[in-house]
Image 1 (cartoon, rainbow, N blue to C red):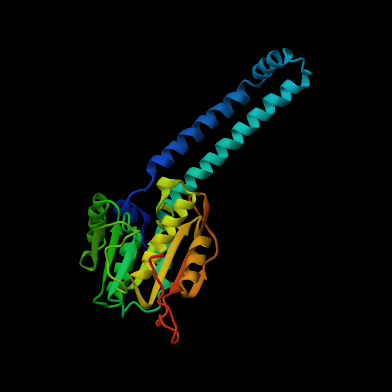
Image 2: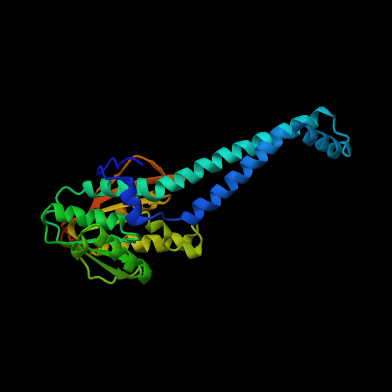
Length: 295
């Protein structure tokens, strides 16, 4: 199956550890891709009978005979193009679920310049542990005595994540907790590094992805991410769709060195990595007001 460009590891081994996320979506799309492919083949094999069927249908509306052949050809073409698009979508979901996620996780880890001084790190929305274990591996390589906490909304997920950490040989560097990303169970200024991979966009989805309420919930999660980060600490977030919202919120919170990566297509939509640094000083003069990260 080849090897990962980021680590040189064999993909067979990586799939054995992490499996395939959203496999139901991939199967759903593949089913419809195959269905449309079969319909396209039937259109090609029985084109003339289908034209006659269109002629009989259009004759009732007194449409010229040539329109029937055009309608049949157009419908067949749309069916074939739909099949191709669905196969592409299935392939993109399959690629995004693990190969892209795995390589992007290591790219995020590499955006932090010095892991040797990191004592506490947080992976917000750790899921299967791809990013979490990448952080733990970096801590192990750098000889750090630090630990990384993976937070997820599901206790079942956190137990599964701990198993993948043991399989990766970094179990002693990892701990997992169940929690709400909008109310993180950690004190202010606790973590040296906070990371999150394709997770923040899911916060507030019960309100609908494009509603004001959902946006407010996502911004609350971003505020919590900033709150638990130490002054001078680094945050790295890879996410879909709503990255401009995060950038605006980080700028409102006076974060420094806010950087946005080039676009990467993941799960058929645009994604970006946003990195930033929390200011070392929260007060800037005699009449300063302390920033409220929870807003």
